[in-house]
Image (cartoon, rainbow, N blue to C red; front, side, top):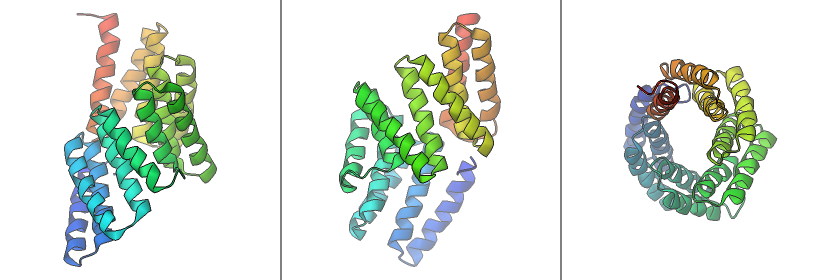
Length: 242
């Protein structure tokens, strides 16, 4: 799923799950259910993702494995973010934080930041997102850093702080290009396009959105494909309403 081959990821994970069930490997089942949940979110099937993560939560509770449970709770909250159920998302992310006794990972700090910005606790949310970037940089967690920068850029854009949104998205774009990270490249281009649109530069906005559109054709991440089409519609509705 890291390379964007989501359907192959699901097929492989389902085989792994069957093997783990056959040998009664509870931890293996939980980890595989987590991978399936992540893959289903990339397909935009958030309900299926939640179903798999709730099964994983039950297994980790049986194992009494606090760190693994915190990861699954964090991911479950992320699925609820995608359904715009932000307070439910915050509930799961806060539970994950409690399990870690406040020792936040970069990913959990990012998720808490996204929730808090969405429910209007802007300063607190931005502080968590900036903390997520700092933790990821300090620990050399490149994928988490890309995720955190993407969420921070999107948060700045949401609150109409276009200067910080653009600078954060440019940093993300540079890192994503170096790693050929298609999903993060797309997210950077979308934010940059919206920043250009806000500045009245429709031509530049359309260029970014077209780049994102081209990139989206080589991924099966449907949620990003939907967002790319919506961005193009926004750009053209201003320039060519018909």
